Length: 287
Length: 302
Image 1: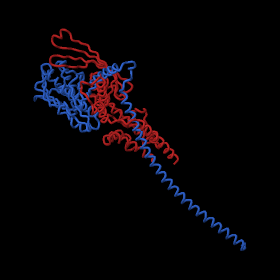
Image 2 (image 1 turned 45 degrees about the vertical axis):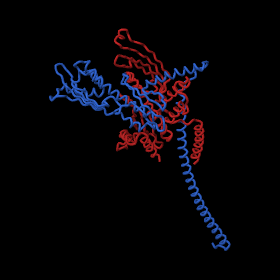
Image 3 (image 1 turned 90 degrees about the vertical axis):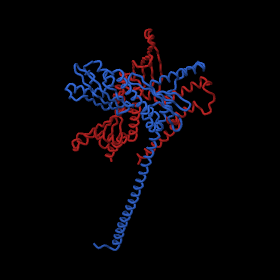
Image 4 (image 1 turned 30 degrees about the horizontal axis):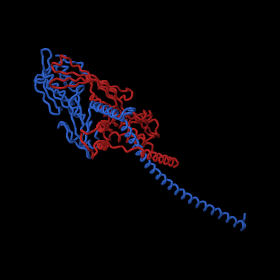
């Protein structure tokens, strides 16, 4: 009873603090309503004057709103950008009406928590019929230790010089990464005694222990894979740690087949429900 | 020993006292146990109520935590794009011009992410750029009207891309997801088209008939000839791209044209062609055929 009362007091205090914190922070706009708000800011319903009478200030305002919109929509924020043009057109080539230009670019920014720096070159060849643009060099500079799951993908993107694929897959990777973080955090907070995150907040694995049965541990490893085509998908595996004695008693080989059963569970219930049911299973043993 | 009356009286008195006392004790016990039981019940009920209240508070705390986190992250995200103030000592005009140049440059930069756009009088026109590996290809646009609900006014997306389906699923709830899905589909289509165009254009010499393809370039069928010394065999290939977000086929069948059975080495080639078409871009496979002349490039099969 005392323990409960103590917890009650602690919870009430925590809720009061959180309420105050909440009140101090502005309500974020949902993406759609933020876009609508941005749009209203630059096109107020009573705007007077046409395009020609716009002064520099309003033009700047509009461009910056466009940037804010792109930032919101792509999730990518660009900090630095530079461009250098080199004209490779030689006189001989000019006679045939072919123009060759090399453009060197430097781009840096971040997509949510992932920071990137890019250096690339584009060769543009213009002849009578068409204009072709080809990326002739691509360097992606990222801290290798920060997101090890990305390193193989980055090598591949550099090899193929596929700039757009880099950004597309990066976006989907970030989505999955944040989902994994949120999900693990949710379970850690819901079941603080049973669930542990060995690698901290951005853990790739979650372990479930049973207080009444020390020695039993379930570890869920959640990897984010990017395949050859740049498609991002989650891959979850279950590892079991069971004392020798218990293994000997396990006649129906439940422990051995657990990883496979977990895969089926995932397919049927989805990630969150599967993890929840595993945790509940181990906790039920306590009571 | 004879008991005197007094003794008897005293004895019975003490007996009665004993009995009374005993009875009193029993009564006290019952009362006590009743009280205790009632107390226990009250305690249990209180405990349950406490437990329920704790559960409720825990849920409330979780929700508040999530809300605070979300608000904090949103504040962080929206201030992240604000540039630090480096304009001390500059005239207002200069500051404005600097901001103008910077904004223009940043907008150009966004083109390289594959998604860019410009504001219009009714909303925003999003431009989706496509590429296949190092080749930059065509762009498409989607003109959105920013109202409740969001809707598509105009677009240049080909009719065989499931735009309406994607819009119905994602446009209102998650515009980012809608645009990136559309990006995936368009880039994959552009990539498949590029490969088919290159095959028809650069490697027509290998084809023994026309390249048959559907508009979406998700089904290709062609016949081609491979020479090996004096011999030459015609193969027919069928490439099916069931996943519309990728540029490699999901099902490949290569068969031998003609009635005679394939010799062992040709059968081996046929099988390896199937693998090649499944794992490498189409035009690169034919480029390897061309490079090695008559010999199959075994190093491509990895």
